[in-house]
Each structure stands twice: as C-alpha cells, then as structure tokens.
Length: 329
Image 1 (cartoon, rainbow, N blue to C red):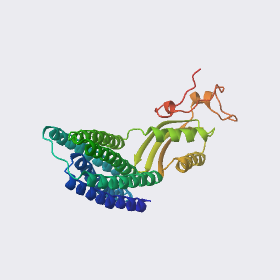
Image 2 (image 1 turned 30 degrees about the vertical axis):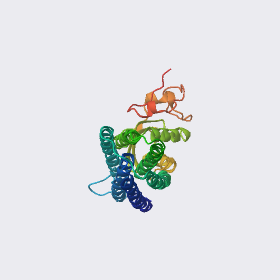
Image 3 (image 1 turned 90 degrees about the vertical axis):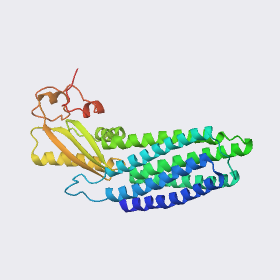
C-alpha cells in the first residue's frame, strides 16, 4: 500500500505546484492581498506534500534494530510540520492585512484574477477529495491530513472569488484586506488543529475511536474463557497499532490452551479493526482468582469457589484500568 500512497502524494505535489503557479500569476495581474494570501497557502501545500512524500517513504521502511516498532510515527511529524507552516502563514497574512488597512493598494484586472481563482479552486476541491478518499482507504494519516489541508485551500478560494466579485461590483478597496483577515483566521484554525493532532499522536494519546471499535469487537465476540480483559492500551505507528493488555484465563489451562485463546483474540482484532494494516499484540495472561468466580461465565467449571452472581459488561471504564474485574452487588 505504501507504493500507491507514494504515487498519490507525488500527484498531490505536482498538481499543488501547478495550482500555486496559477495563483501567483493571478496575484501578479491583480496585486490583490486576498489572492496573495491564497497563493501563500498553496506554497504550504507544495511544501507539505514534499514533506509528506518523504514521510510516507520513511514510514514504509521495515522495522530495524534502532526502530523496533517501525517508522510509522514520522507521519505525525509530517502533519505537525504542515500544521505549523499553515499557522505561521495565517499569522503572516493577518499582519499584511492590517498593513493593507492602513496603506490600501489598488486592485487591478479583477476578472483575470476571478477566472484564474475559479480554475485553481476547482482543482483544489478535486485533488483534496481524491486524497481524502484514498487516505481513508489506506488509513493513511498523511494522505488524509494533506487532503484536508487542500480542501481547506479550496474553501479559501471560494472566499477569494466572492471577495473579488464584491470589489468588482462595489469598488470598495477595504473588502480585499477584510477577506484576507477571514482567510488568515481559517488558516490559523486549520494549522492549530493539525498541530494538535500531531501532538496527540506523538504523545500516544488514547485514540477514542479505535478503542471503542476494539471494545465493540471484544464484546460481540466474547468467549466464556476470557474471564476479563484489563489494562488495555493502544499505540499507533502510522496505520499500524501496538496493543498490550492483560487477559484473565482459567488458572488450570495448559500453556497450549492459553496460546490458543490469545491467538484467537489476536486474529479477531487483526481481521476486524477498521483500516488497520496490522496489530501487534503483547498480551499478559493472568490466572483467575477467587474474586473472578462471581462473574466467570464458564458454566461447567468444576473448581468454582463462589457462586455465579452476574455478568460484567465490558466497557472502556473497566477494560482500560490496570485492575481485575470484580462483581459488585
């Protein structure tokens, strides 16, 4: 899949470069600040695509002695880099807009700028949507991040075109810097959002969506022999996951039986977790204790020390903490 991802990100780089050239041409004709704002964002698209190109290449390399978990986390650096550049560009555009309010400039050849902006905007929407679709199919953080950014560039183009139309109809010069302020605010918001996502990934913040999906599969396919699952933790490396947890099994199981149960849990989650290329499991098995008897679902157990009291429903609240389940009346 990494080869196809590289193909898509190369396509993004070359098309983004062409769109950027069109926008700067529009700016040279019009001298419009709002068009310059749009063109500067396109430079970031190009730089972001170049960095994403390298990160996808690096993320696809196999694990080695120095990187035992692989190179997948570089994708978080990619979206963090792109988010930081978007934020800086937004701040720069905001400063320029304030200066334009103080020292207004004449906007020229508006119709040429409108036509070129429409063409660039359509190209952005098509490319952004394409990258989002392919990113979701490959579960690629980098492709989805790049697609979201290019789509946001397309929405910015709508604002640019609307501003140019208004200037053409009214002749009001202040519309140009005002539209730039709005574009800058959108860039600052987008950059902050991408940077936050990168930090969450690098800091191994819990991915609520993936956790809930795994818990749902465990609940749906729960086996009586899996007395409880606790201390469930997930780390993400690109589109691969590292999962470790504790599973309580009957204390009288042989090593062969324990291996069979763990292998079935491994296979269950690897086959059903959406978009995961692979899940690497590190599962610690615990023997059942007397406190497990009241909620143990094995009806034919011959060594039960306490009567069955009721089933404990699995949820995030009892699967994530490092604590064996206990039935409370």
